Length: 309
Image (cartoon, rainbow, N blue to C red; front, side, top):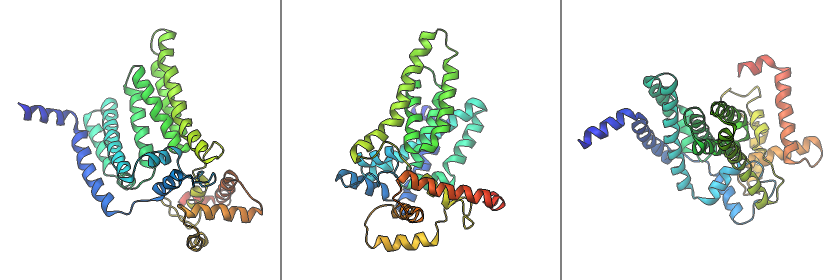
């Protein structure tokens, strides 16, 4: 009887089987692949009050705080848990809007896709960002009640704090939650659901940013080096699905690395190059605007080359 119950549960919830298999594969990849260590290094500087305001600009605030609180092994386990919940959400969404087989197919495509496996194994915020959006959208579309709405707000807000580029998708999720909630009868009932969800979203999105700002003395905000990453993907040497840093930058990075023992030296060099080109002491935000303008110039002057990327 017990085995039949287990079998029925696995048939009803195939994400458990796929999640366990995927976690085993992810654990093997995490052991055999070199993990990015810049966030544990940033967290180490933060623990010793050595992280300057400028150095705190590129990292993801929420992911930096997670690494500040937990060691790398705990962060890796957090990734595995996020993978399981993401697969569950994708399966449930596919089953709800199409059928069970569609849910299984979507789940398998996600579980064993290259980006999913790569980012699960490395200590970067992108994987948790994906998990927050998957589960948050599931809650917005399929769950009801104030608790689910608050959880949805927390997850969608956390996605913004992990990377600000998640804001459009998070706002879409918030709009979907609002549309479903507005179907409830009574303005007071709707307000009891939406008000705490909106507060949870705001706290999750802004709380980590303000916390890192208070700990480092930086102005509230985060650049996440978004424009430098855009520039690496908007050059003739780019390959479309990966970054292609300029050769000069890589040479300078190696030279600077002999003198400065800091994480993420590439973005230090990017700021130095922008300041040298401008001839003045630019802020991190102004440095990002400089590289963003170069990316837009490539699009304007070489639209055909940009379209081939």
